[in-house]
Structure formats: C-alpha cells, structure tokens
Image 1 (cartoon, rainbow, N blue to C red):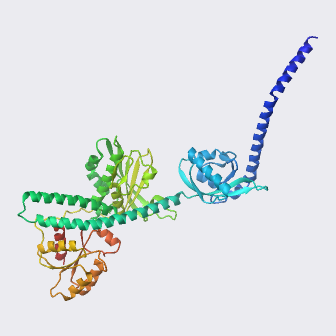
Image 2 (image 1 turned 45 degrees about the vertical axis):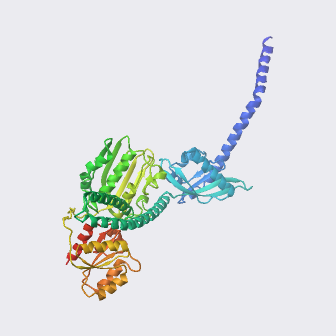
Image 3 (image 1 turned 60 degrees about the vertical axis):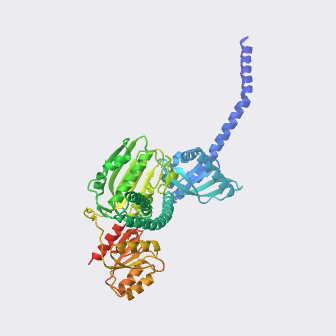
Length: 552
C-alpha cells in the first residue's frame, strides 16, 4: 500500500521537471524547425534551379546561381573548369566565397560591392580577382541578373562570369609598352641634344690637346675635362640605349661562349656571398648581337641581384631554345613577339622578390627599389634587349626571387670574330674638298676647324637648299658631302638624294646622335649609308672621313 503514493510522487516530480524545461525545449524545437525549413527551402530552390544545369552547361561562360543568403543553387561546368571546384562541393553552402576570396578584407569588399549592385540593380561588368582551387589568381568579369518571385522579392541572382585574365595581361602589356615608348622618346631627344653639346666641348678640348707646346699642368687640367666628358658621354649612351638609339656593332655571336668569357667579371660584380650557377644548353644556335651590349645586360642584372641579396644567395644564368608560334589568343607575356626560333637567356636570383606595384615600374629610369637603391641599369637592359629585336619577361613575387627571361632571335649563321680596328698614332689627313651641312652653328664651326686642320678644303653651310646651289655652282669638284641627318625643311637623306642626282660621283657621310639601327628602322637612312656617331672625337671623325674617301 505504501508503494503507490511513492510512485505517484515520483511521476509528479518528473512531470514538474518536464514542465520546467518545456519553454527552453520549445525554443530549441522552433529553432530546429526554422533551420529545417530554411534547409528545405534551399534544397527546393536547388532542385528548381539546378534542373536547368543542362542549359547552363551549354553556356560558354561561368554560370552561378546564388540565393539571398549567398548560398550556391547551381554551378555549371565552366565554373568547375575555370574555378576548379566541383558542383557537389559547393551546392547548398556559401563556403565557396571563403575559398575564392581567402583574404577577409577583400571578401568583405566584394560582398559590399555585390550588395550595392543588387540594390541598385546595376550588376553588369563588375570585375574582381578570384583564387582558384590550384592557388592561381584569375580576373573574372561578372554580369548579374536578379530572379524575383511573384511578390517582387529577389530570391536569387544569376551571375555570369568570363575569365578575362589573359585580356587584362595583354592590356597591361600594351599600357606598359606605350609608357616605355614615351619615356624612350623623351630620353632619346635629351640624349641627342646633349650629345651635340658634348661633341663641341670634346672637339675643342681635343684641338687644344693637339698643340705640342702646352704647359704640363694645363694639359692635366684638360685631360680631367676630357675624362668628365667621357663620363657624361657614358650617361648619354645609357639614355640612347634605353631609347633604342644606341650605336650597335652586331656580329654573329655564340651566347654560351660570351657568358663563359665574362665569368670572372660576373663574380666580381656579385661579391663573395653570392654563388654563381651556370646552366648552359648544348648546341645553342647563334644570335646576331653586339657582344658588349649583351655583356652589359648580364652585368646590370648581376648588379641588381647583388643589391637584392646583401646577405648572400644564388645567381643563376641559364640558356635554352624556344619556338614562338602564332596564336590568336596569344601567350600574354610573349604576345608582341614575332613567331620564330629564339635563344632564351634566363637570369634568376634567390632574393626577396618584387612587390606587384614595383614589378610594373621595374624598367623605368631611376626606379627606387625596396632596398633603397636607384639607378638606370634595368632601363638600360630593357633598351638593349628591345634594340636587338628581343623581348624581356619578368617573373617574381614576394619571397619568390626574380627571374628575367630574355628572348633573342636565332641567327643560325656561323660565329663571327670581331676584329679590332687598328688605331694609328698619326691622325689620317687629306686634301679633298668637303661640303659640310650642319644647322647647329657651334657644331658646324667645330667640324670645319677639325677638318681644315687635317688639310681638307671645307665649304660650309647651314642650309640644305644652299648646299645644292653650291654643288651646282662651285668651280672645283667636291669629293664628299658631310651632312647632319636631322635638319629643318630637308633631312640629310633627302639632301643626299638630290645631291647625287647633280653629282653622281659624290660620296656621302652622315653624322647623328642616333644609331644606324634606329635610322634604318625608321627609314630615315637607307641600308649601306655611312655614319659617324655623335659625340665624335677628332680621331673618330678623321678616320671615318678618310675611310669614306678611300672607297672606290
């Protein structure tokens, strides 16, 4: 009899406990019901919209359907191919955005922009950078369309995306090329004008030094001036190199041999802490290049590597062969190269690498690097490679070192050995008649004085039209037309063409601050023309004049 009440008490206690817990349990049940309902709603939308997957898979662009909670409702095959994630991995969740935009600040910016576009209903052509499954970065151009229910509420957004990474790279290359070309033109103009001034100073210093009765201390002072002129000339040569106007002396060259011959010079440039590694391909074809300029490229890159690796590292020079074939899409880093065979000179270091913003400006003159150095070396490299009809490509990133890949057209002809020109002690002289045409009065006066001191009869003018009149009316034969290339009204080449119609026997020599390659490329001069480069010395002018006059 006593057990029943006891049992009732126990049941009553359980009942009261259940009653006490009921509000909390009801809350949990309601929460679970809401989550279940949301999940069912999402699954319903997935079943509804993913049923169009065959249609979406037929599209040539990325097609992603996203609900208003940023969950994926559909994901087509192009999305799988471009972004790297399979449909089954992303359907029904919004984790994909953390994968595509792993940087939180950038992801937040993307979401904010997307919300603004949805509110404004302007969803077309929004570009951002995604990180694909394999870790590569791609630029995607998005176009969105809102999908609304009967009440006008936005239930989902259909995002169509195109991979425009290649297009952006090519556009960036075009922009950089135009920028570098503009800088090169400016540098060339400055160097050309400065060369005229240096030529005048150098010429008069040489004239004074030709005097035998100079005081020793005065001669020393003049030699110091001559050295300063040489240093100034070196700077103008750098400007001319960058502007692709440097005077080149190309020969058929074995690049591997040139690299081996300058090994000690490279080691001296690198310093002791940096290891030099050579990986030179066997049976490398020849190239047509100026050996001094190619050596300058390698030394400039070695100096750049030394500045990037003050604590030491590895500096690797490698050679190989590449065949560039035409493709409508193009391989973006090589998009501007002509199809054909190329020798590839790869120069790499194990330094800290380059930040993206520095990489974009790397070949600008006097760029400041993150290690605080400024200079002209890489701009000079760019100019030399471009003037050799080559292409330079840079691969780098923070902590990844830097690789310069230089593509130079294959020649395939037998190697040439450059023979040094004999330099005589005595300046070559003559008695022939020279018609000198130069619109710069100071330059003309200097050239006249040098040539007359060498024994030549010189008729001078600053006007090409007057020069033609002189050729017609001068009572004695004129042996040589010495003319500047760039003059107002009529160029030196136009003057020479008219002069040769009057006097077919006339020999022609041009002088200019621009290189022969540049003048030929711009069709300012014709192949076979002879040129003396500014700034010229008494010796270089006298030797070139004598060389042309001695030709039969």
